[in-house]
Image (cartoon, rainbow, N blue to C red; front, side, top):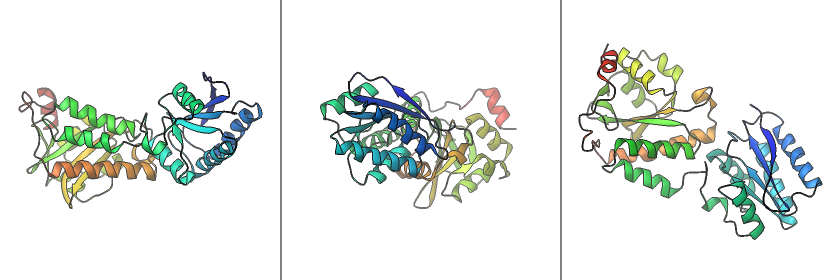
Length: 307
């Protein structure tokens, strides 16, 4: 869906707000320039402009160039640009195009407008809100939870939060290598064998796998049923020092699954996978009290998977 532009109200006179949502299509940078031109012509941006980017799913280099040009143009008049909710890819493109110039940020449009008006905004590189780049503290926090005796629900929630904040997926399951078995984090059911078709496919790949690649891989009925149960449309092998540690089964929440990810998002997913794999390599599967004998699915579904 092409990017839509919508002017938003702000509590600060002289500070305008513009929402961008959708996915970039050809010519969107010209539509952005036209929308901003109307605001500038009306004198609405005398103090600055807030760009609400929470639902902007991708960004072209041309659109990033237009935003960087606007940032410099407003700076010449003593005004600022602030963003809200930039995803990992959008933030990366903006930093690249700004060439080191600070770009302010707020958690909401009102907060960003206030920060512009007071001139006290920190640069985007040092603040993480909405769906921006996961901070080192956030990643470290998840890795600490992963290696602790936290409940399966807590580990899953932390993983989902990490992916959602980076715009890398809606939810995920963590598959671990437990000896010669592949098991779901926190459970005992052997969903596949490391030496089986799925395990061999994961071990042979360093890049994420699409549903198509999995469907043509001649997986066993048990492996196929598990993948259907998980709802995943992106499977990311977790490898450390060339050794398979498990996999991330990601439900992207996007039309097109893996093919809707751009290079920056694939890089982000790969970096997260490397960190998780490194942590798994240092630990043994965690089964907390009361979960040690927990089955993945009800008995009837286990029987179906074992067909």
